[in-house]
Image 1 (tube, helix red, strand yellow):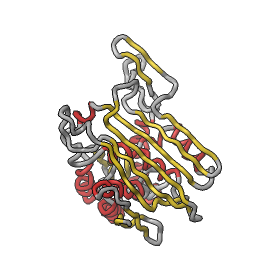
Image 2 (image 1 turned 180 degrees about the horizontal axis):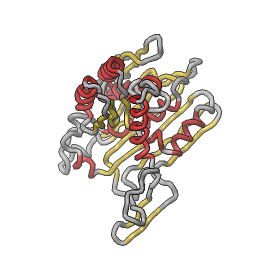
Image 3 (image 1 turned 120 degrees about the vertical axis):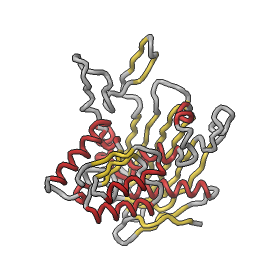
Image 4 (image 1 turned 90 degrees about the vertical axis):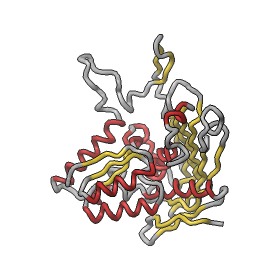
Length: 313
């Protein structure tokens, strides 16, 4: 009890493993998506509260200095109006993940989770998602090259409602059939508020490298500096990919020292309490796809917490 565990396994195994850890008094950091359904999410939240342990989601974009700055600026741009994001990985990932692709999870859970969480974090307390509709593109994963029964690209369209009743629209797209390019993952978003807009190309930071051995690439040492220091030691401690773990470890130490309680950390970490909206949108999208594109509604309790995902009209 009091130790911590990190969980980076196929999506459909997260809940069982995390609950086993929580029930033994362990603090848990789980990769995104933390679980696949809002029911599982709330089950894990209840267990964490009962045991008094910290459960958080490893969403490293929250520690990217550009994304963090964009989030703070978004909150000063008035009502939410429009958000669109795109994230992709090359076709080779279908081979890498063939043992779980289309079986235990899909490309929306795997990649859309990044920007769905970022958007929900950016407008937390300002707007709520009400309805989600999903569409998909197919043909590459099911081709003779891969023979995997899963979607190539998934797009979620979410209707959001601002606190004053004004509506906003979000479109999240994820794909794993991109060609090989200068980056492993294309990732970008555009945000429009009533009083301004923001555009971020996370994959290209104005830093390119070309070598005989590796060809042309757009490097991003802000995520992780893989190049060792002059002594040959690891030097990536300043990267946001590292900081997302470090911040969790520091939080667990603070809880263990009695300096704070897990419920005090919702504004500092992607806690299991603060990430319910992400799971609700992702589940609604999957259910919409399975139901032929039928819209799914997100239902809320009096405290504004999502309680259930239900079929809409």
